[in-house]
Image (cartoon, rainbow over all chains, first blue to last red; front, side, top):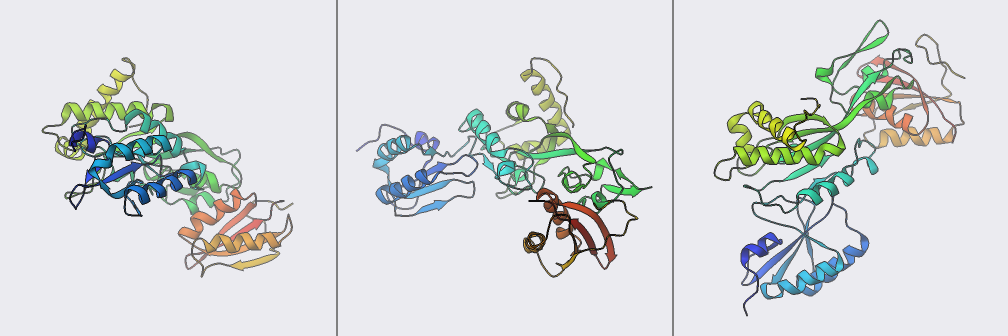
Length: 299
Length: 87
């Protein structure tokens, strides 16, 4: 029997060859690692009917049904569509967006990572790019979802602002600051922005509400990868408002597509030309995406 | 009503030592102790620097209690005074 689709199409749809004659695995993705109980039951059923009675959890919040016969591709695909299960992907494409639970669940979370993951998924998932491109979002500088290990990573940050008129001089902010960015001088905290992690501990600990949120947004990292030559992503832009995150991703992808040679990964491009030169091209692209208007962000 | 100025001396109603605990038990013990208390009473918590110091005061505020004072007592230990909020 001959399938009506070629092998490249299978890979694009998350159907990957594995060990064993005509055995394939079906990769599924989630949005920010969430799956409903109903989908879990449907997934268990698919694993029994098409696979080996188990589901493998991937490192990128996906799931794989292993041992699927090549000739049953169209059947499992149709079942997945009917059940609302999302396919994963493979090859030189934008992969599953990984995200931590963020501000809707986590006490440390500063931004709504689930909403952002859904938005990024809608905008980018599966898009063909020169080299495989992974995206990750973390809701705060604890970086549990490891955005700096992704080709493009966003990290939720808040910038504190001090109201001296409300301050009672207790010094708690200086003691709880993980970056040692605050020093008490004459009964008032002095802020050193260069040491601030922008995680907001001063704001959340202040008993007098003297520290408030000045700005909230996403810091953007590019060029992170693990693999054979690991390297962390470098800071490209800061305090991007949520409504401009997709745009920042588009600008990074355009800069990458322009600068890459021979299908290099993002990290290889960034490391070969340097983050500053990459940022210049990113700025140009950002301007193009905003119709020639200059973007006002931090970096 | 207890004031919040640095100079004022607050006498705690209950004292708790969490210096031998690690996250999440540092806050769990603090929370359980506060639950046994009445609104307006003051709890003194002895805690270590680092993770407990970064997390306990903010969790206390999040749960609606009032942090009155944080005082280093040496040896990387701190005394945290908390006024129990109302439920």
